[in-house]
Image (cartoon, rainbow, N blue to C red; front, top):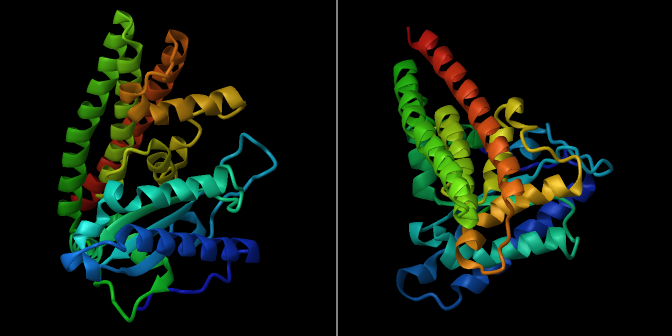
Length: 307
């Protein structure tokens, strides 16, 4: 079954915007690989696929009210070689440019998240019944395709395999996330504020990862908690609303948490107060509560299906 290629369900402005996104992706990939040697020289982009809410048609775009949920474009870039999936080496500039286009230049009215995988990784995901890739194959829209490179037919997990995998991901992922939350509380008491901020980022990243793995058997290995959050909120509406966005200060707090991954460790200009850390800690604790609830409910469903 061929993948859809039409964008007729999207308003013309969104269609033009996605064309611009694809241009940026190709531009930056060319720039990143123009001096490549050896087998990397032949590396190319095989597909660019829109997935998530804009592909399914249930996106939310509420530009007038600042505090409303706004869907991002979720994009999967499939490349010919595993080496080309290295984010730092090949995709950092592309990421920066897309953020700049949205926040500063305003040439994009919609934020963009993208993940990069080799064709082998995507087909492997389909062969192992990873729901994440199966849904991209089912609902995704190809914005670009080189030749006719078919994605493999998905091989769904058996009910018992699905249960075993979900249980394993949850039992490993949840304690590992909450351990970092506890670490943050310890550092906060000691007054090591930057360490507390970093650990809260790690707890958040791992909670979203735990949810994505338990529900879809996949998480992008990505430290951008805004991207992980947008994927997670697309899976269960209870995950949405954990980060209040009623005013600029609240929105800035999530931004600070996102930046803590690098800045709390490397920037002497990173400032975070005890009061901010207490507020962020409460939100992370709430995220943990909801992730625990959503994951345990899913495991109960899978147990019934396997029985």
